[in-house]
Amino acid sequence: MKISKNVLPSIYRCKICGAYLERPIHCGAPCDLLLDGQRRLMLSKLLSALLRHIPHEIGISLDKDGWVSIKELVTAIKQRWKNKELYNWLTEEHVIAVAMLDPKGRFEIKDDYIRAKYGHSIHVNISLPEDNEVQILYHGTQLRNLKSILSEGIKPMKRVKVHLTKSIEEAMENALRKGRAPVILVIDANELRQHGHKVFKAGKNVYVTDYVPPLCIKRVITPQVK
Ligand SMILES: [Zn+2]
Image 1: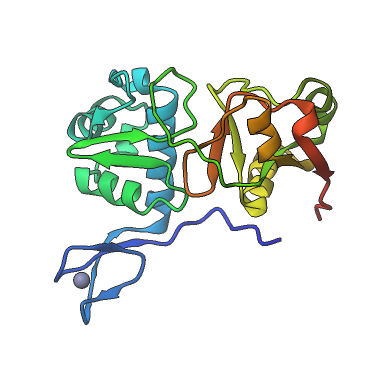
Image 2: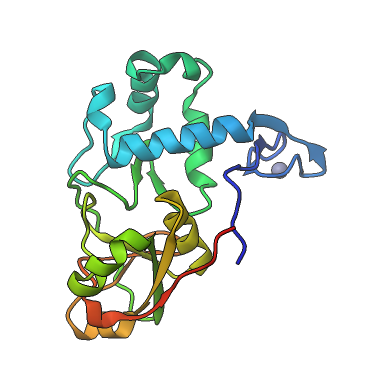
C-alpha cells in the first residue's frame, strides 16, 4: 500500500498559455513559479478549514450553497486570519490555482466564487450527483472506534455526512491521521443503496452517505504499522 507523504508539488504558471501546472515547462518554455509546495499545502489546509468549518473566524459567511467570493475570501484572510502574517503574499490567483489542481477535488470554482465540495461541519446545500456504480467503498478509522462502529454503524459525527472513499490508500491516510492503530472498513455500496442510504460522489475518490449500518460493513482490515 502506497502512502503519499504530506507534501504537495509546487505550482507553476505557463508564460505562454497561462495554464497552472505541476511541472516547470509548458508550451516549449520555462514557466513562472506561482506557489511552492509548502505554501500550497498551508493554503490548501486553510481553505479546507475556512470553507468547511470556520468561515466566521475571518468574518465571512458562506451562502446557503456554500459559496463565497474569492476576492472577499482573500481580503478576509489577509486582514483577519489569526496567522495573517503568513499570507502577505496571497492573491486570488493562488486560491484559484490551489482549488483547480487539488488532488482530491475538494474545491469547486464558478465565476468568481469558490466552495468546498464536501467535508462540511456547517450546514450547506450541496447537490452532489447520486452514484449507482461504485461497488466497494472504504472507511479509515482507529481501532478504538471499531467496537462501537460494528454495533452502531458509521455515523457522521462532527460532519454532516459520512465520508467514504473508493481508494484504499486514501482510507489508510485518513485512518493514520486519527492515530496510530489504523483500521480500514470495507463497505458494500450496493447494500447501502438497498437499505435506502443513497451514495453521492463528492470528490475524485470521495463518496458521501447519511449513515452506514453495521451489516453493510463486509470486512475489517487491520494493517500492520511499523
Ligand atoms: Zn502553456
